Length: 360
Image (cartoon, rainbow, N blue to C red; front, side, top):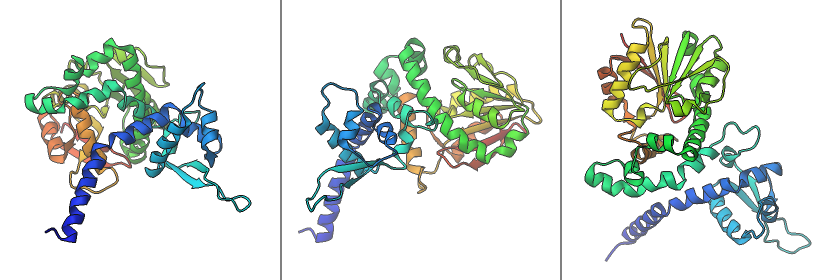
């Protein structure tokens, strides 16, 4: 017969599995709130408190399912995306109406003017069926060693983006919002590193948002935003930045330093080594360097971002051809084989670390 402690442990195990298998509900509720712009609606009332009726009145629909909205809000309150309080009793009668307000979490989901640091585009990107479907292929990936995205869509993610303008726009918006957030932390801790750079090429720089932010803080730098031709074709003009289309596996424009944010984790070791060898050719041998802003895994770590870093490793498995996150030893291996025997890791106030790599 089980002891009370054993019974408790068994029940906790059941609850744990049930919570994990239904974890998708959190993402879907979050996506729904972003699509309906619920955070922006509450923000338009000064951040709250507001009633459900007030929120519903700002959602354009001839037949709004307010009861559905209430249930979605209830879960998001439980997850601290929004806060909720009952109305104060009036005239001795208890009120059942709930008042909602923004929290520090939901402020990251604002999309209106002045919301440059927003995760909303990433919520919409990562939860789109195009990017969710590869997750259902993990079992076959393990059995065959295949690529999840290719199993789901019949081609690599970069080819899919080049052939599908809607996906390309969705993906670029998601990546740009991450860039805007991460670059703040990078600039904050790497001021001395950028001060000594005269020209900088951002490899895989997308539409140039990251590089533009760096140039704003360090206007002496000549910036080159380098990405695939179909990506830079949609890039807006930025002061101090020129856009160059090309393929990093073939050649990289010359500069004092190469910058790569969230690029290396898209590729397997062999491809990363090819990229690094091309980086070495692009920079001066004596004073050149590669600045890599990427995740450094600590599987046993307990900081606020360590679990997210492990999750990101599976995101790479879902979306990329051989992409993965790496711990320090794995970084050391590809850096050395790519021609960079000396490196330094600098922490930032974000998911990412800065890895300075030198050819000598």
